[in-house]
Image (cartoon, rainbow, N blue to C red; front, side, top):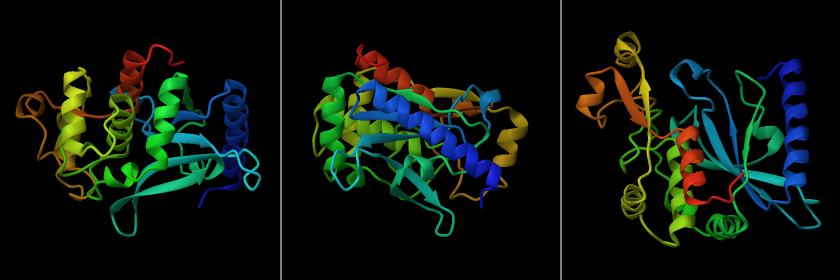
Length: 231
């Protein structure tokens, strides 16, 4: 469980994030946090979710975040809807978030997708921290977010993962190439297959001790390319 100091830091960050979201005037935003410190690999934020403002009397205009997490007890991925404080109570390597505000048209499209059955339809319970962006066998949290975003941007309501991944390729989505290093790739062999496996990584990258995967960096970059109104 988080320490009192970690809890205080999480609640302070949640309050600051809520204030920033309210000031933006947005109804839907992307929020990224950093769990493990992977900055040495060029990964600034390791986890991302969709924040929605709930405008009803019961919630008082609070923000909820929909995101994918792997459950430690089952080692399976699932979708969770958390308040900002709970979202930030996970062990974080730094108490900082990245807020990304799409343009109003994209916000409306995302709100429609998030209210539908699409988020669950796009979920693959087999988790892989470094899932290949065009794998349908496994998934990580940022890949799920990318595919939800693709459903909104493409207008392909009800599309399957293969269809959305094909659309991403036509739109020149660029995944992140991570220079893992020989030692770290060797260490992967000792980790459980339901956390990390390299079966679907491309041999030409593995030969250079690299992995190709979806990261928060690449999701945000793609959104900015597709929607110039993104801030």
